[in-house]
Image (cartoon, rainbow, N blue to C red):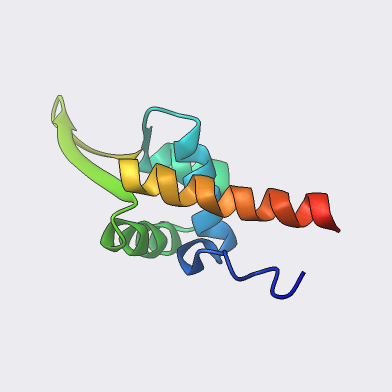
Length: 98
């Protein structure tokens, strides 16, 4: 195995981004508070990683009001799902070949 990390997606190098994508991969959507609780991160840390994933086109940000309260939820995009699946396949290939 020449370069085992060649297929890694740099967008998922951070454990927080990997956690965000993992959580969104198995849920239809998650709001900011739930993601923050799941990953045990600060508001600013989560926001910056979400922003990077949004810029990459991997996460869609949905802002709305529920009653009078603002609510921000996140959904994995089609390209995000595909990119994450490919990243996971590389990890699986590494595990099987070691």
